[in-house]
Image (tube, rainbow over all chains, first blue to last red):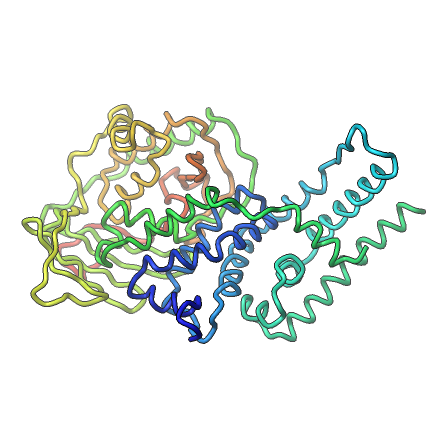
Length: 188
Length: 277
């Protein structure tokens, strides 16, 4: 089960002392909220981070105690909830897509140009994310945004590691293609 | 720029939240964790808060919200449809039976004593849990699914039927305000505790919908469904960062449930625990 202060040990104790589960919240809620905010916007994230931990609390007796770190498990629960808000997620990306940057008034011309280009890239990226299928998007974002290793993504999403690899490859290929095509179009 | 570097730049724009931003979520968790005994899982309003938040009962599909006037109209239709329903309150010695399905398909059946003085029962996921009655302020202690022999603890009776609730909108609004620190907008959880797995007279439920018309900032949401997948129209408001939605059948206007709660499949009055209507 790992050291006595591991997540697994705390979860195990929380089956008899439910209030101990607060420690799991304090350790991981900031990262889970940020992940949800990245995918759904801050407002929805505040609601869903509460839901993530209530579901985790309800399921704590089934936690696999051989896994000392609970964060991948929590990412899995949060990702499931994101799946129920898919339309909002796509809307969130489209919204970012629509934001037009306002350059600093005293910005040097080159700096402004660089910033606008970066903004344009981000808009294209957001559009590309919105177009991915959700399984590919889950894998890509858990890796690229949250920094989870393949094995933890596999555990979080309950899929084989091989599937993580193939989804990541497909997602990256599609995102790169979306960025390339638009870049070419801009220059042409 | 590399796609992964670009993604990581995008991610960097979202900061970690401050502890204060997480305080409401933490409070919800602690409410659930403080739920004292399983037998109070549903009967007390405080416990219901945790349950309501724990279950994704109503899935929001989509649709642009519209104005207060339209929401009030939906509520009035619902109140009228509800008042037309038959009213057969249980006798004190009877039981209120409720069968619900949560957002994950879990089925729960509950028998609750009408006046709170008789032993009830919960059947859920293959487990049977006793609900010993509260008599003279004391109830047997339940651990998990078992009664602890000889042990009792202080309790408040939880009748499944309250005969004396207000039956018109204005009186209900006063009643709810008085129990929600004067704020009608904050009453969603209180209402849930009042209607969940209870017998609520149609006139009382109609009065709740009429009271809701007095809440500020109502919107109508089309295309919602309850935990059992039944489609409906929602009336929504936000209080203290939480979104509350009442869901009504699109055609008959009858009440289907609240967001975040289990869908009621069957409810009725029976004479004995274990009997179904």
